[in-house]
Image 1 (cartoon, helix red, strand yellow):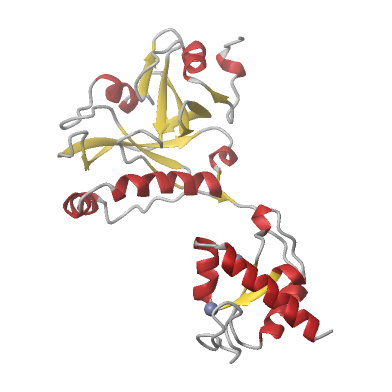
Image 2 (cartoon, rainbow, N blue to C red):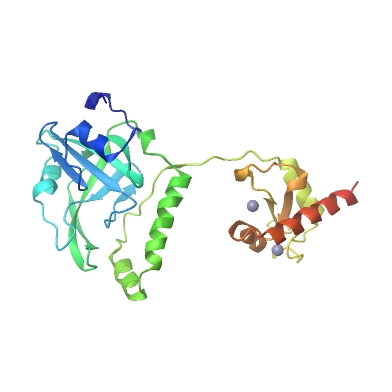
Length: 280
Ligand SMILES: [Zn+2]
Ligand SMILES: [Zn+2]
Protein backbone atom coordinates (compact mmCIF):
# COMPACT_ATOMS: atom_id res chain seq x y z
CA UNK A 1 0.00 0.00 0.00
CA UNK A 2 1.26 3.46 -0.86
CA UNK A 3 0.86 5.16 2.50
CA UNK A 4 2.00 8.61 1.46
CA UNK A 5 0.25 11.16 3.63
CA UNK A 6 0.10 13.77 0.86
CA UNK A 7 -1.96 11.42 -1.28
CA UNK A 8 -4.60 10.87 1.38
CA UNK A 9 -7.80 12.61 0.31
CA UNK A 10 -10.59 13.71 2.64
CA UNK A 11 -13.52 11.35 2.29
CA UNK A 12 -11.28 8.25 2.23
CA UNK A 13 -12.29 5.42 4.55
CA UNK A 14 -9.42 3.52 6.19
CA UNK A 15 -9.21 0.70 8.69
CA UNK A 16 -7.17 1.08 11.86
CA UNK A 17 -4.05 -0.58 10.36
CA UNK A 18 -4.11 1.82 7.44
CA UNK A 19 -4.46 4.84 9.75
CA UNK A 20 -1.28 3.67 11.52
CA UNK A 21 0.55 3.11 8.21
CA UNK A 22 -0.27 6.57 6.89
CA UNK A 23 0.48 8.46 10.06
CA UNK A 24 3.00 6.14 11.74
CA UNK A 25 0.96 6.49 14.89
CA UNK A 26 -0.18 4.20 17.68
CA UNK A 27 -3.14 1.92 16.93
CA UNK A 28 -4.96 3.05 20.06
CA UNK A 29 -6.58 6.10 21.57
CA UNK A 30 -8.63 9.01 20.38
CA UNK A 31 -5.59 11.31 20.14
CA UNK A 32 -2.53 9.79 18.52
CA UNK A 33 0.73 11.73 18.35
CA UNK A 34 3.23 10.73 15.73
CA UNK A 35 6.75 12.14 15.96
CA UNK A 36 7.74 10.56 12.63
CA UNK A 37 5.11 12.41 10.62
CA UNK A 38 4.84 15.32 13.11
CA UNK A 39 1.09 14.92 13.26
CA UNK A 40 -1.64 14.56 15.81
CA UNK A 41 -4.40 12.23 14.67
CA UNK A 42 -7.75 12.87 16.25
CA UNK A 43 -10.40 10.20 16.15
CA UNK A 44 -13.95 11.26 16.80
CA UNK A 45 -15.69 7.97 17.43
CA UNK A 46 -19.46 8.34 17.37
CA UNK A 47 -20.02 4.64 18.03
CA UNK A 48 -17.84 3.91 21.05
CA UNK A 49 -16.60 7.11 22.63
CA UNK A 50 -17.84 8.17 26.08
CA UNK A 51 -17.15 11.78 25.15
CA UNK A 52 -19.72 14.31 24.09
CA UNK A 53 -18.00 15.60 20.96
CA UNK A 54 -20.21 18.11 19.28
CA UNK A 55 -20.31 19.75 15.88
CA UNK A 56 -21.56 23.31 15.67
CA UNK A 57 -21.72 23.62 11.91
CA UNK A 58 -18.13 23.29 10.70
CA UNK A 59 -16.63 23.61 14.15
CA UNK A 60 -16.01 20.46 16.15
CA UNK A 61 -16.01 20.87 19.91
CA UNK A 62 -13.73 18.00 20.74
CA UNK A 63 -13.24 16.64 24.27
CA UNK A 64 -9.62 15.98 25.17
CA UNK A 65 -7.91 12.90 26.64
CA UNK A 66 -8.49 11.29 30.02
CA UNK A 67 -11.31 8.86 30.72
CA UNK A 68 -11.53 9.32 34.50
CA UNK A 69 -11.20 12.30 36.82
CA UNK A 70 -10.51 15.89 35.82
CA UNK A 71 -8.65 16.29 32.56
CA UNK A 72 -5.49 18.38 32.45
CA UNK A 73 -3.74 20.24 29.67
CA UNK A 74 -0.88 17.77 29.54
CA UNK A 75 0.31 15.12 27.08
CA UNK A 76 -1.73 15.10 23.84
CA UNK A 77 -4.12 17.72 25.23
CA UNK A 78 -1.10 20.02 25.53
CA UNK A 79 0.03 19.19 21.99
CA UNK A 80 -3.42 20.07 20.67
CA UNK A 81 -3.71 23.23 22.80
CA UNK A 82 -0.40 24.47 21.35
CA UNK A 83 -0.94 23.17 17.83
CA UNK A 84 -1.18 26.62 16.26
CA UNK A 85 2.37 27.34 17.48
CA UNK A 86 4.18 24.01 17.72
CA UNK A 87 4.00 23.11 14.00
CA UNK A 88 2.18 19.83 14.61
CA UNK A 89 -0.41 19.16 11.90
CA UNK A 90 -3.74 17.95 13.24
CA UNK A 91 -5.79 15.47 11.21
CA UNK A 92 -9.33 14.35 11.88
CA UNK A 93 -11.04 11.00 11.43
CA UNK A 94 -14.64 10.24 12.27
CA UNK A 95 -16.06 6.81 13.01
CA UNK A 96 -19.74 6.23 12.22
CA UNK A 97 -19.45 2.47 11.73
CA UNK A 98 -17.19 0.32 13.84
CA UNK A 99 -13.69 -0.13 12.31
CA UNK A 100 -14.32 2.38 9.50
CA UNK A 101 -12.23 5.53 9.87
CA UNK A 102 -13.46 8.34 7.62
CA UNK A 103 -10.69 10.82 6.91
CA UNK A 104 -11.97 14.39 7.20
CA UNK A 105 -8.66 16.13 6.51
CA UNK A 106 -6.66 18.76 8.32
CA UNK A 107 -8.24 20.51 11.25
CA UNK A 108 -7.09 23.53 13.22
CA UNK A 109 -7.61 24.95 16.68
CA UNK A 110 -10.15 27.75 16.26
CA UNK A 111 -10.01 29.56 19.59
CA UNK A 112 -8.89 28.76 23.11
CA UNK A 113 -9.68 25.41 24.67
CA UNK A 114 -12.26 25.74 27.42
CA UNK A 115 -13.45 23.62 30.30
CA UNK A 116 -16.84 22.13 31.00
CA UNK A 117 -18.28 19.27 32.98
CA UNK A 118 -18.98 15.81 31.64
CA UNK A 119 -19.41 12.37 33.15
CA UNK A 120 -16.34 10.16 33.18
CA UNK A 121 -16.10 6.43 32.48
CA UNK A 122 -17.35 5.67 36.02
CA UNK A 123 -20.28 8.08 35.71
CA UNK A 124 -18.70 10.68 37.99
CA UNK A 125 -18.95 14.36 37.13
CA UNK A 126 -15.58 15.81 36.24
CA UNK A 127 -13.97 18.70 34.37
CA UNK A 128 -12.90 18.15 30.79
CA UNK A 129 -11.07 20.28 28.24
CA UNK A 130 -12.93 21.05 25.05
CA UNK A 131 -11.09 22.12 21.90
CA UNK A 132 -12.92 24.13 19.24
CA UNK A 133 -11.53 22.80 15.95
CA UNK A 134 -12.29 23.86 12.42
CA UNK A 135 -11.84 21.81 9.26
CA UNK A 136 -9.34 23.21 6.79
CA UNK A 137 -10.29 20.90 3.95
CA UNK A 138 -13.24 21.24 1.59
CA UNK A 139 -16.25 21.95 3.77
CA UNK A 140 -18.55 19.70 1.80
CA UNK A 141 -16.80 16.71 3.34
CA UNK A 142 -18.33 17.62 6.63
CA UNK A 143 -21.81 17.04 5.26
CA UNK A 144 -23.11 13.69 6.45
CA UNK A 145 -26.06 11.87 5.02
CA UNK A 146 -29.30 12.12 6.93
CA UNK A 147 -29.19 8.33 7.35
CA UNK A 148 -25.77 8.45 9.03
CA UNK A 149 -26.93 11.27 11.26
CA UNK A 150 -30.03 9.31 12.30
CA UNK A 151 -27.94 6.20 12.86
CA UNK A 152 -25.70 7.96 15.39
CA UNK A 153 -28.73 9.39 17.11
CA UNK A 154 -30.34 5.94 17.39
CA UNK A 155 -27.12 4.57 18.93
CA UNK A 156 -27.28 7.33 21.54
CA UNK A 157 -30.95 6.61 22.25
CA UNK A 158 -30.09 2.94 22.74
CA UNK A 159 -27.50 3.91 25.36
CA UNK A 160 -29.87 6.40 27.02
CA UNK A 161 -32.60 3.78 27.35
CA UNK A 162 -30.31 1.72 29.60
CA UNK A 163 -29.80 4.58 32.07
CA UNK A 164 -31.78 5.27 35.23
CA UNK A 165 -33.85 8.44 35.56
CA UNK A 166 -31.33 9.66 38.17
CA UNK A 167 -28.38 9.32 35.80
CA UNK A 168 -30.37 10.79 32.91
CA UNK A 169 -31.04 13.79 35.15
CA UNK A 170 -27.38 14.13 36.16
CA UNK A 171 -26.35 14.08 32.53
CA UNK A 172 -29.13 16.42 31.41
CA UNK A 173 -27.96 18.93 34.02
CA UNK A 174 -24.48 18.97 32.47
CA UNK A 175 -25.69 20.01 29.02
CA UNK A 176 -24.62 23.60 28.41
CA UNK A 177 -27.47 26.03 27.77
CA UNK A 178 -25.58 27.80 25.03
CA UNK A 179 -24.03 26.27 21.92
CA UNK A 180 -26.58 23.83 20.56
CA UNK A 181 -24.85 21.40 18.24
CA UNK A 182 -25.87 20.93 14.64
CA UNK A 183 -24.53 19.28 11.56
CA UNK A 184 -25.18 19.91 7.91
CA UNK A 185 -26.87 16.88 6.47
CA UNK A 186 -27.71 15.75 3.03
CA UNK A 187 -31.03 14.14 2.18
CA UNK A 188 -32.49 12.62 -0.91
CA UNK A 189 -35.73 14.45 -1.69
CA UNK A 190 -38.25 12.52 -3.77
CA UNK A 191 -40.01 14.47 -6.48
CA UNK A 192 -43.66 13.63 -5.97
CA UNK A 193 -46.48 14.33 -8.34
CA UNK A 194 -48.73 17.12 -7.06
CA UNK A 195 -51.51 15.70 -9.24
CA UNK A 196 -51.35 12.25 -7.65
CA UNK A 197 -51.29 13.80 -4.18
CA UNK A 198 -54.22 16.12 -4.88
CA UNK A 199 -56.24 13.28 -6.40
CA UNK A 200 -55.73 11.15 -3.28
CA UNK A 201 -56.96 14.02 -1.09
CA UNK A 202 -59.99 14.71 -3.27
CA UNK A 203 -60.97 11.05 -3.25
CA UNK A 204 -60.66 10.93 0.53
CA UNK A 205 -63.19 13.78 0.90
CA UNK A 206 -61.75 14.89 4.21
CA UNK A 207 -61.83 11.42 5.78
CA UNK A 208 -58.73 9.46 6.78
CA UNK A 209 -58.54 6.28 4.73
CA UNK A 210 -57.18 4.22 7.59
CA UNK A 211 -59.17 5.11 10.72
CA UNK A 212 -62.07 6.42 8.60
CA UNK A 213 -62.55 9.43 10.88
CA UNK A 214 -62.84 13.03 9.64
CA UNK A 215 -59.61 15.03 9.44
CA UNK A 216 -58.68 16.20 12.98
CA UNK A 217 -58.62 19.89 12.04
CA UNK A 218 -59.08 22.37 9.21
CA UNK A 219 -56.10 24.24 7.78
CA UNK A 220 -55.86 28.02 7.36
CA UNK A 221 -57.75 27.80 4.09
CA UNK A 222 -60.52 25.91 5.86
CA UNK A 223 -59.66 22.63 4.14
CA UNK A 224 -59.72 19.37 6.13
CA UNK A 225 -56.12 18.54 6.98
CA UNK A 226 -54.90 15.18 5.65
CA UNK A 227 -51.46 14.02 4.56
CA UNK A 228 -50.63 11.91 1.54
CA UNK A 229 -48.77 8.67 2.05
CA UNK A 230 -47.30 6.05 -0.26
CA UNK A 231 -48.41 2.56 0.80
CA UNK A 232 -45.20 1.14 -0.69
CA UNK A 233 -42.69 3.76 0.50
CA UNK A 234 -40.86 5.74 -2.18
CA UNK A 235 -37.65 5.21 -0.20
CA UNK A 236 -38.16 1.46 -0.62
CA UNK A 237 -38.80 1.66 -4.32
CA UNK A 238 -42.58 2.20 -4.23
CA UNK A 239 -44.06 4.04 -7.23
CA UNK A 240 -45.56 7.54 -7.14
CA UNK A 241 -48.85 6.37 -8.67
CA UNK A 242 -52.51 6.93 -7.82
CA UNK A 243 -52.86 3.26 -6.82
CA UNK A 244 -50.04 3.63 -4.28
CA UNK A 245 -51.09 6.96 -2.76
CA UNK A 246 -53.57 7.53 0.07
CA UNK A 247 -54.68 10.42 2.28
CA UNK A 248 -54.32 9.91 6.04
CA UNK A 249 -54.83 11.82 9.25
CA UNK A 250 -51.48 12.76 10.90
CA UNK A 251 -51.93 10.06 13.55
CA UNK A 252 -52.47 7.25 11.08
CA UNK A 253 -49.71 8.61 8.86
CA UNK A 254 -47.27 8.36 11.75
CA UNK A 255 -48.57 4.88 12.53
CA UNK A 256 -47.82 3.76 8.97
CA UNK A 257 -44.24 5.01 9.34
CA UNK A 258 -43.67 3.52 12.78
CA UNK A 259 -45.64 0.26 12.62
CA UNK A 260 -46.47 -0.23 8.90
CA UNK A 261 -48.33 -3.47 9.57
CA UNK A 262 -49.43 -5.57 6.61
CA UNK A 263 -53.07 -5.55 7.68
CA UNK A 264 -53.17 -1.74 7.43
CA UNK A 265 -51.31 -1.76 4.12
CA UNK A 266 -53.79 -4.23 2.69
CA UNK A 267 -56.74 -2.18 3.89
CA UNK A 268 -55.31 0.97 2.28
CA UNK A 269 -54.59 -0.77 -1.03
CA UNK A 270 -58.12 -2.11 -1.25
CA UNK A 271 -59.60 1.21 -0.26
CA UNK A 272 -57.74 3.15 -2.91
CA UNK A 273 -58.71 0.65 -5.61
CA UNK A 274 -62.38 0.90 -4.64
CA UNK A 275 -62.28 4.71 -4.68
CA UNK A 276 -60.60 4.76 -8.07
CA UNK A 277 -63.14 2.29 -9.46
CA UNK A 278 -65.99 4.45 -8.19
CA UNK A 279 -64.85 7.45 -10.20
CA UNK A 280 -64.38 5.23 -13.26
ZN1 LIG B 1 -56.58 8.21 10.63
ZN1 LIG C 1 -45.92 8.64 4.41
